[in-house]
Amino acid sequence: MRLTIPVVKVLSALLAEPDAPRYGLDLMRLTGLPSGTLYPVLHRLQAAAWLAADWEDVDPVAAGRPARRYYRLTGEGIRAGRLALAELRALAPAERPHQGGAGATGAAAW
Amino acid sequence: MRLTIPVVKVLSALLAEPDAPRYGLDLMRLTGLPSGTLYPVLHRLQAAAWLAADWEDVDPVAAGRPARRYYRLTGEGIRAGRLALAELRALAPAERPHQGGAGATGAAAW
DNA sequence: CACCCTATGTAGAGATACGATATAGTGAGG
DNA sequence: CCTCACTATATCGTATCTCTACATAGGGTG
Image 1: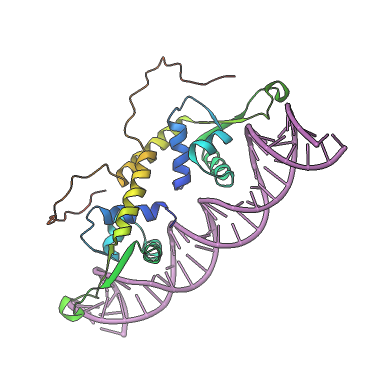
Image 2: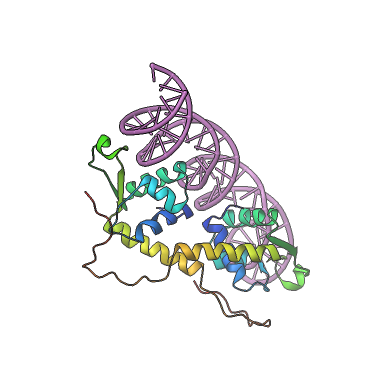
């Protein structure tokens, strides 16, 4: 499973509330991804068994809208997703203390 | 400039010490990226004027190694890079408090 | 019927990622 | 001289990924 920005956005959105299944349009709004990016990501996550999907059991007429397909992270998906976010967090460390002006900052040897 | 994971890794490595220029092999080790990924990224960053490059002025025989090409972020690159990392930080929020179960599922806010 | 909203999804072109490979310099060993 | 190893930069080719369009389909309204 290759961790790309769209993949991470989806994982992040799902991990915010791992017990709350999300459907596609919902995830599009949460992540800002277009459907043409989101759905391939969802399919790849399912192929990797990080994600499970189920059709909503609802009568479209009664609901007044098409049925939704709900996606939820598997146990493995939750573990792997948290790991992925932790790696990202390491990439974007929280505010470093300002290194004032003076600092002989390491290198500069030429 | 499209922000991909490799791009962010490079920005992160360079921003850790914005005044310390890095050379390719150095960045490969810092980011873990293979040369086939790193150098195209460096070229894209230069095309976007986020990065400047200069050949090391050294005599290879005296140094006992080939000359290096040093890369450093431009002012714009530093600004844009910091913004990019801030966005990432929003994607990978620090440890959330454990939510028992019930969770009134508020929407995410980004 | 036309149009808009929800909802899921595919197609195709273009951009990216990365293993393999190329180039080039130093230096050691056979 | 040749080969190998190490440093160093960089490209090539293919597989993968992204994203703008587009397709499909159900519901409701005018």
